[in-house]
Amino acid sequence: MHIVHTEADGGKGGQPLRIINESLGMVERGHQVTLLCPEEAPLSELARKAGLTVVNLPLKRKNISNLLILRRWLNSHQVDVINSHNSADTWLVALANLFLPRAVPLVRTRHASGKPRNNRGTRWLFGTACTHVVTTGEALRYQLVDIGVPLEHSTSVPSGVDTARFKPGDKTEARRHCGLSVDDFWLGVVSHLRPNKGHSVLLQALAKIDNPRIKLAIVGEGPHRETLEQEIAALGLQERVVMAGHRSDPEQWFPAFDIALSPSHDMEGVPQGVLQSLASCVATIATDAGGTGDAIKNNETGLLIPQRNADALMAAIVRLYNDGALRKQLAQQGYDFLCRHLTRECMLDAMENVFTNACRAGQAR
Image (tube, rainbow, N blue to C red; front, side, top):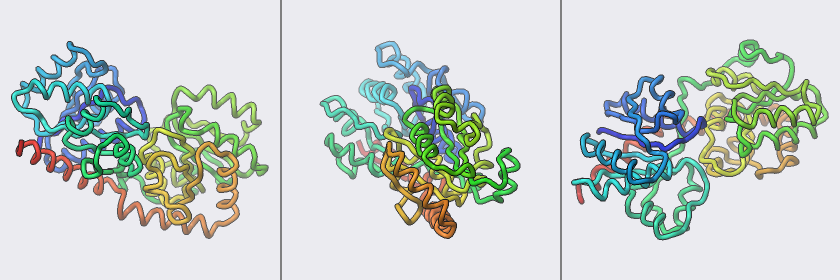
């Protein structure tokens, strides 16, 4: 198949990483993949560095000019299926399809858990213009049901983790590599620094724990960094929190943690940091944001707690700090669950099936 991905602008978080990881896997399986996105979108540079074919088109705004440019490109290329990733590019593809000699099957992937608008246009877009809808978590599928999209018109495909890259490692060696003290108890969170990722709630929880041995490494970069640094100072946590910044080797950091955390609230599929911690066989605490519950089964594959609740987060941390046997049990069960259901190969198998069925549906029209 010739698979074309479109993205208006997914920022620097998990969305472009999912697109790249999935695209590389499809190329490995013998498919042709082309990515269409604006030049200023982070996906553009990231995908080129990964060796993927990128074509820069203005997809960030829904207007006649951009629609005509996209239609011209689609009309001059043989495309089997399109996978869109944002609202603007989905609309542009859907409208372009109305004026093509033969419409290209459109699969829309929804990465975040924000509920779509329930109006005639949105219902047409998801229910009619899209051949199929993919969500990155099961909870997101049911948000579509609320606007009239039947369950059989959607499939949940979490972003599978590469278990050849993220895997169990030696804790002491990992801490030396990351510059973390060997003898302390390290909490870790790996994510883009945005307000909805819940770092502020995590800092509040840490401040409630009167134990200087329990420390926190925050790995990632983003617009919320300055605010977090101010909060760390205000809470008197300078000696207990490491702001590690962006790291190109997150797979080296997870094995250094005693507990990995995902304190997000709202706008999540299944966070990649959660999957990566499970793949690294690290005990994981996460909030019930978006589709996180697909990976973290409470008291089975990790601890699942309410969002925006510093007391619940503190209690979960203290519980695992005091119970090494439970940490080990949850880490192993989480690892086993991920290897069965949430690997990169699981994701590729599911998406290949979605694309194949979409192509068949398009041919039947």
